[in-house]
Amino acid sequence: MDNFIYLIIVVLLFLTELIYFRIADKYNIIDKPNHRSAHTQVTLRGGGIIFPIAFIIFCLFNLNEAIQNYWSFGLGLLAICIISFADDVKTLSNKIRLSVHLVSVTLLLYFAGAFNLMPVWAWPILFILVIGTLNAYNFMDGINGMTGAYSLITLGSLAYINKEIIRFTDENFIWYPIIACLVFLFFNFRKKAKCFAGDVGSMGIGFWVLGLITLLIMRTGEYKYILLLSIYGMEVVLTIIERILLKENIFEAHRRHLYQLLANEKKVSHLVVSSVYAVCQLLINIFLIHSQLPFWAVILIIFIPAGGMYLALKWKLKKEYNL
Image (cartoon, rainbow, N blue to C red):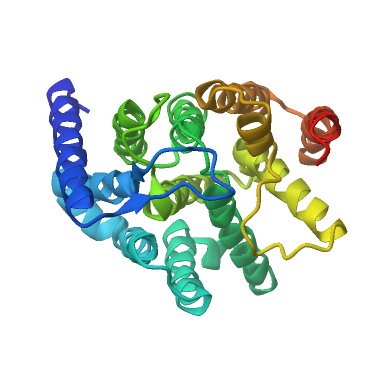
């Protein structure tokens, strides 16, 4: 991509965010602190609207290719972002949100060619995996910098794979969300964030990242690349297991994630916690990309030490604060 085009995209996304701030302020689209919040100040919600806008700009600069190759992805992304933004403004029923999620994931899997490359019996597994990962993105969006920094690491890893390992998509299709993450982080990676991503942001960038990872897996047949999201996956799965063992309703809001304990009880800086999560995923990605080991071995090497450290730290914090 030409450097001048990069600059134009950055300016457009900055303007989009600034215009949205005025709209959100006027119509009171805010996030008020509650008993499970990791923040204490009223903050604008929905700053992640920059991610679907980035895709629209991508289409405008790559119109013919977008119409031919990205229409199904775009419809899925816009559908899930619209319903998520509506949910940011006014809470919607789970049935409505799940219905749109199913349609969007269907379009994503069609875009990636999964229905042609995977046997029919595997389709339900794919739906559960993708919808579960999307919701994991939403669950983990709880402190300043988390969604933006973590997504930036994953997208950067995908850009490296696309350039140095195997070309699986147009490089612009990765660089646009990278630029959007950088612009979003300018407003969010702060002690007092100017805005939060909101559901529209976490679901939007999560959908884009999953679209890229699914494309990569379908192109290579290497399922190990789902581990580009292994930190999020481990955190959410272990927390769900913990809540089931405690006989809690796993669909209700809570403060049992490790990052929540660190930010809320331990009072560790949001930016430090987000950075540690991103760096841990980066280290895993470096190993993952260059490893020639079989998938099962990679899983064991990643999850046994990472899971052990996670559980040990969480147990220590729960004991320290009598949780």
